[in-house]
Length: 107
Image: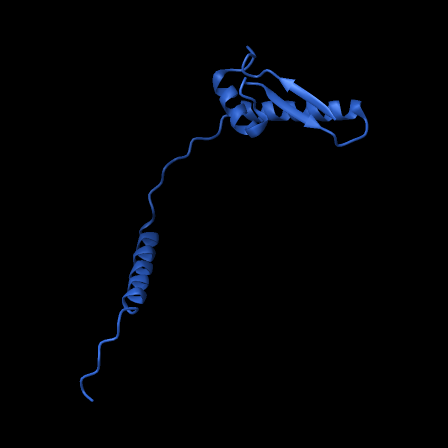
């Protein structure tokens, strides 16, 4: 097995925003000291595992360099609002029908 440790928090090459995205992408591979720890034991060859792990680190950093697109807030369409309200009315009617049945006084 090969373990690669990259001190991302101390790296002057990465901006704070890239470091934050890298931390989010790394998940539990990010240590408390701000290091990124990657492991690989896919092949029997240590050299090949080292190549694989370097490629993974490169891919992870490249992914962190790309800022996500900002989400543009949109309003629900009129049709979707009407469908939602209709579904709520139907659901309310179903629930209203679950109450105790009134006694029949005709008999």
